[in-house]
Image (cartoon, rainbow, N blue to C red):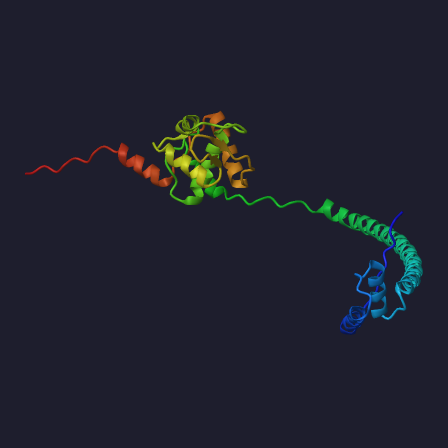
Length: 270
């Protein structure tokens, strides 16, 4: 059987202590010198707290506990009612949100269909403009190559150098790793001025090829060449198939004419 726990609340501790002291002094000055029993001590504590005896304290504690229990039950019932009300409100709000979301989805679908119908005629009419090609520049770069596609001399302009290297990019094997000797074999076959290392370094700097940190693995960057580079590659491939010898420029023609001219006769003394 569980033990019933009784408690009390002391509002004035000083008065409570004085009352206990008076009770104990009155017992000591009396004729009864027996030790204070457990029940007598409980009665002293109860009287000091304002009760008639310990039984009065227990009866009062039961009434308070019953009142607290009733109040707690009422609060729990009220909380359940409030929670049920909140749940009902939440359900109504969620249903309303679903209706609003469904409405927004319907409006969005109608707007997208309307935009698609409006954009379709524009898309059909608009065509991407082709990139401009400077054919004069292409002709100048073609003079740096021979009939077999070998780069005889390194162009002076940076823009011409980059376009010329796209021909080397097209000659590199695609979508596989290459060693440095393999790259050198390709570049030496296309180099006619004796510096394939310059071509390899410039291809790395212009992001036409990638190179590992230990400089052992090379790989061609798979990208679409610019319009001028694509035109140069196509012209070189066509010339290589047909074996067309490039026409020298006016300066080169003058230089060749001077080289082929017979030496002038030296004047004789009389």
